[in-house]
Image 1 (cartoon, rainbow, N blue to C red):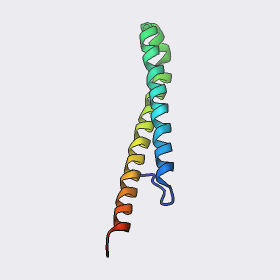
Image 2 (image 1 turned 135 degrees about the vertical axis):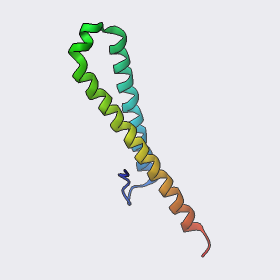
Image 3 (image 1 turned 90 degrees about the vertical axis):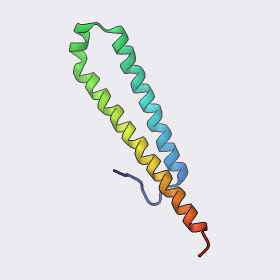
Image 4 (image 1 turned 30 degrees about the vertical axis):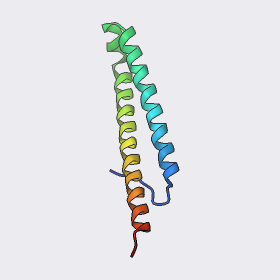
Length: 85
């Protein structure tokens, strides 16, 4: 699954990767804080919200993977462009 846009620059891809990593870190911190500060009854009440955060984390991991694929493709294209014919 690649959301790489052909006209996207390496800088754009790196910015998307950075944003996804920042979001992933923030979500992980929230989930960790909740797991450390809630008791069993609180967990039962927050199950839906925690599941939503986990799905958001998965989406960010997928976006990081897509950005990585985009960078790899851009690097291959740059090498091919500079290869003697």
